[in-house]
Amino acid sequence: MVTYVIILLIAAGVMSRFERIDVPIAVLTQILALAVIGRWLFVAIPNVQPSTALLMLTALYFGFTSAAMLALFVPILSGLLLGIGPFVLFQFLGWLFVVAVVTVLKPLLSRSRWFLAAVGLGAGYLFGWTANLSFAEVIGVDFFKLLVLSLPFDTAHGIGNVVFLVLLHDLFVRIFVREDG
Image (cartoon, rainbow, N blue to C red; front, top):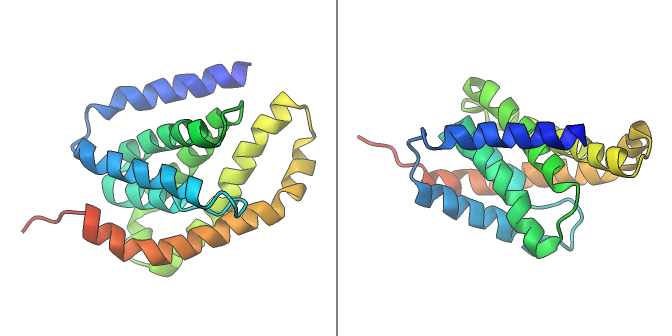
């Protein structure tokens, strides 16, 4: 229970920073819609969906706060389609960690697509391991057993991230990133 309160406080902190960003809300809502619909379209392939790649690209080009807001709303809104449970807040936390890593590594990621792909692969594991915390807390399953059992799913997520990052990067930049001058 304490974990949920902490996650909700983190979410409140993210939301309090949102009104200070200069990214047009229309751009973020379009990316949010793509991430939610992407999760729904790929639901038949376990753990493979474009949401993580879209959040990574948002963090890379629009910053931490914009991507963190999407990290909060993607699991909530996609949960309305796919089902909401105690894991939704942990999905937010997992994507928030991914967004934080991308933000910290931004200077390196903007120079190397290979490094971006490698971070995308790692993001599958980071997200999966964080989401596993919800099952460990709610069901009481041993966390280390969950890590081992989730390896194939986290690997699929990571490989999916690499594929989506390669496929979506240039399109994302062309559609959403406006460079002046």
